[in-house]
Length: 328
Image (tube, rainbow, N blue to C red; front, side, top):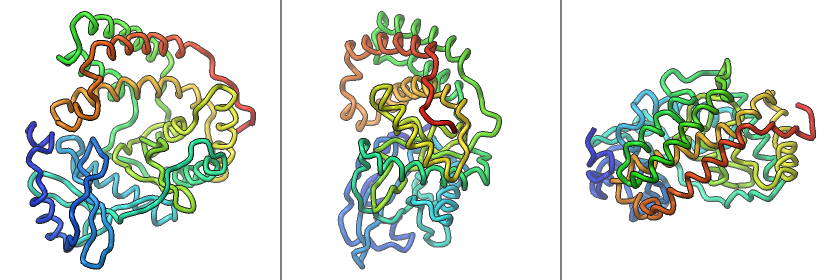
């Protein structure tokens, strides 16, 4: 793997303008960098003042087949009137390659932030996710991974163990906690028989509000349980969460059935995401964008807190799932 390419050190504005020109787009404005850590994303306008967004994917993360599967899913959803931002077909294709980078161009979309405390918006999101899954289950991924312990826990733990960013004494404590956590996860996790094609990273930041929800950034699309696209939309204390689950699942169930047994996977998914997220940052620490955005990860106090947090999460995995008010 080329570290320079992986960390985008070989990508400069002149290259971006040249490759966009080759797709038939004439950039008439400057390139405005958008807030994206995993990829490099720029907004711009063409000669007709039409807005676009160009996404350059981080090299060596997804291969061509996997990126095309992401695009295919969003195109299917858009064709089914699910509100998503799908890539544009330019020169007869949605995925382009130049100078060692895969990239795609999307229409520029305006909108407001999704309001996490707005139950009307939550209901609309539930309905749209039900429709999204109704369409996504009509096909399968052949190249994108399935959510499971190997990718979301075992491999991230190996990255944590190898990181020089964590002092040896704290790392020993952290790895001990993660080992106990792994034993518990193996007891409570189960692979569903027919995994769905998922958005994969459906949190409020990836929902744009435009007279209704619009789902963006399918970069983490993979197969897995339906609950993966739902649990990050629920927050607050137990009573608030129960109310939100009622609203979300009642709306979702207008288009898709939901297996309530998947609620048992919420806490495993939460802790797996936490470990995966830490490893994701550690693996990209040589990318200058990451130390700037996450400076606290170079501090011992941060990692001491992780030891405490993961100890608490291990206890949560043993707690029974709270029943919902409604029946689904």
